[in-house]
Image (cartoon, rainbow, N blue to C red; front, side, top):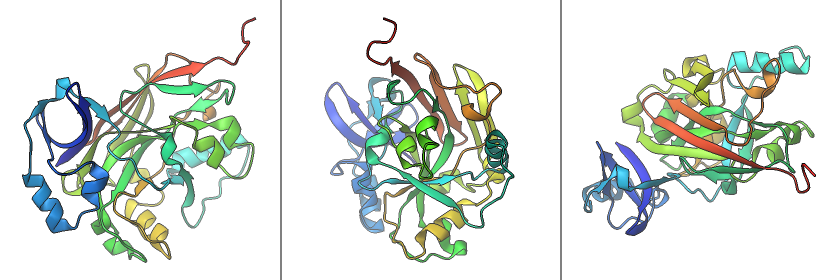
Length: 291
């Protein structure tokens, strides 16, 4: 199944099941976060309580989830991306024995098709990162790798927009990764059974129609199952938790010459079986610029 959160001219945010060109609202459930918080039997019952259909064309999609916790993120998880980063920094590539983790605050999340309002006074080096995002469906801790995919409710697309100058100013990436509007999410939350093997999905990012990133999740250094297992050791994962699994090669800072986002750009993250996450960009000039 495919789930979205939407609003229309006649209603506020509502979760729905996608049925072709129509959306079937879930009655009695306020959000997809609330749906994931239900026990499996209650979730199944919620799937049967459907309201009057709404045409997709008449709906405005919102970010499918609004977690109360930070989004968990994995850095340098595709070999070619790790290589391009090391090359740009003039360093020898040394792959870590465990996933490199950081987080993005809930205030960074943005909706599909929503304009990302970025501030040139804060950063001059906004960059793109297309990623497969995992959504946990079962409360779990100390999960074995062979059991990890059973903890997944579904998957969505995510763009880890990064302020590279802020990210590289310290050894901690958090500030450069968590500015407002730097975590577009969506367009849909697709259940694990519909996606199948998460290690065989094409991931693409287009900037103004030009392909900048294209790879397969089979190129991950740490698989989705390995990431979940490692993250859950000593740490409880809860339904609705989001894990961004890393980005492939082709990011802007590692290009020759480097490329960064400009006012008016449009990014599209496309992941097989999930869809296209589109994000226009508006970058406000610093106060007094051009005088």
